[in-house]
Figure 1 (cartoon, helix red, strand yellow):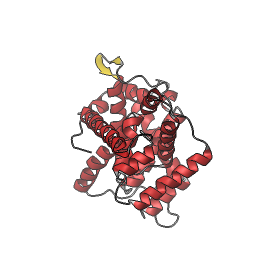
Figure 2: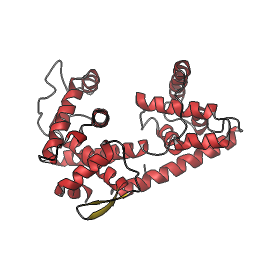
Figure 3: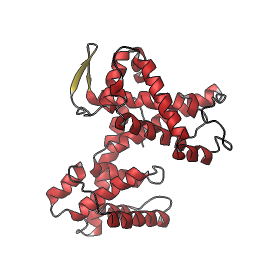
Length: 290
């Protein structure tokens, strides 16, 4: 229903992409009117995420890409859309669908030509040697392609929803889902900033501010390097998933309290984060337990 709604309303599609990728982003609870339709900013932003994930999955340049490469491409495109303020360059004089197709195609070409994009595709053996990444490959059989499309679309939307959770719930949940949820470099820095915030918090109010994302100072480089080594060592020690105790130590939540209390607080945060994530996925039409 979401995909069809976006496809039939150009004004709604443009409003959705502006809400998600043009700063400042509106508060999710703000009520907006688009073509006589009442919709919240959060719903608009979800529509943009679903539409973008669908377009990426169906794009000919990524037809043979696996989920890992496709997710890397999606993150690249999302960053470029936001940092380059691409959507705000639409001048209202043309067709937004056509404008969006051109922008995404050019961004995907940039990713395919970048060292990161080439490394991803070589890793998955989607390209041989120095072949042309822009070459349009033969499509997969329809049934297989549709099954992969639905699975990957849900995965990408779930990943984006996890990244949107408040730090106090989202970061413990991300670590609890490792290794199924693989942290990229930007996310590792975010986790490190969260841990440093809790490590330097001197009272409960500062700890709650860390959880809400209102107090996350940038740690010194030497501290970040030591933390990255600590995280890598924890992943090596527990390659099939991090224990509650390890996650409690990594997040620094309640670091002055006994470990049983720290683990209890951690479980509460993970449970609430999971429930919030499920509710967010249901809101965009995805059923299932992450």
